[in-house]
Image (cartoon, rainbow, N blue to C red; front, top):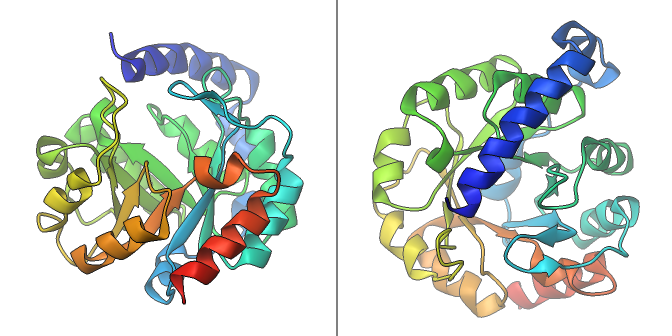
Length: 261
């Protein structure tokens, strides 16, 4: 059983419990449910940097990254740095995140917010909307084609943008459909945790141009971004690189300055 299988198994238990605690009707009455979404797609298309900066306390591959930075400061810092969007990990068991992190980020910045989560149930999409997300993540490796279609169409009906993440050609082919906005290529091999930008390069030409291309994982240098831009990538998801410093916002700011030199 790889790490994704373990997370998914635990997520099903967690979501079933959450459904019992907070019914969908209650989520739909949230103040944020009627909020107009901020477009990550537009920001990325009009940006010279393409940075989507992440708030992540820990991960299964790196254990603790940073438990000292609070979401309030990180969200403000990222917005001041001029990032295109902010990714907020809401998984508790493996990443140390929560839906409260999403709420805190939403109340402190006007950036498009991506709910970074292992979505296996439509309930989580309604939850994302209720807690202030603008974009949801769907992971092809844990979903069937039918689920990707069902979940992405639900998200679109709620005016949420959809970032679909793939790891290989097989996942990409089963996933391409009109209800997606962004296609993300994860450079991390989930079996070995090894990271290679070659994954993004190889899959780039198979992604139709109507989708915004995003490269994820292992992007820790300006050189990596400059290498991937000619392959059509508009978005670059960066977490660890900023979060492992004492000031994530300032790190992002300096990073973006270097890209634009």
